[in-house]
Image 1: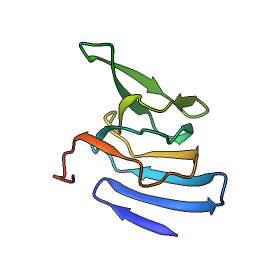
Image 2: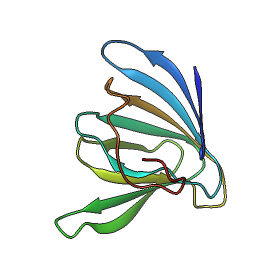
Image 3: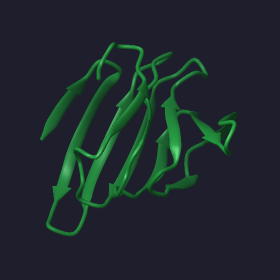
Image 4: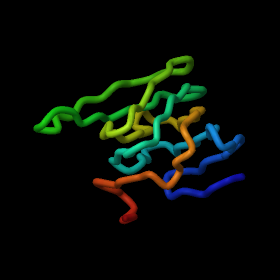
Amino acid sequence: MIVDKPWGYEHIWAKTDKYVGKLLYINEEQRLSLKYHNKKEETIYILEGVLEVILEEGSRRDKHSVFLEPGDTFHIAPMTIYRFAATQGMDVKLMEVSTIELDDVERIEDDYSRT
C-alpha cells in the first residue's frame, strides 16, 4: 500500500498483528513532523541518501542531530522526540520496522500544518 505524504511517500510492505514494515521516501530538502510516540517503537535502516535525525532530549529539550548513511540503523524508543529530514541535497530512502500502533503520533511541529 502506498501512502502519499507532503514530504514524499510511504510504502507499507508488511502489516501484521505484531509488526509493520515500511519503505519511506523523503524528498530532498523535506522533513517529517517533530513528534513522539507513546507506545510505538521503530527501527530504521538507511538504503539511500543521508538522513538527518533531529533529536530533542532532556528537560530543556536540547536539540542535536545524528546523520545516517546507507547501511546505518537507528532505534526510536517510545517517548523519543525526533524528526527525520533529507537536508543533505538528496532524496532519502529508508526501511522502517515498527510495532503496530500506526496512529500513535503526537506532533509538536509540522511544516505542513498537520495536527
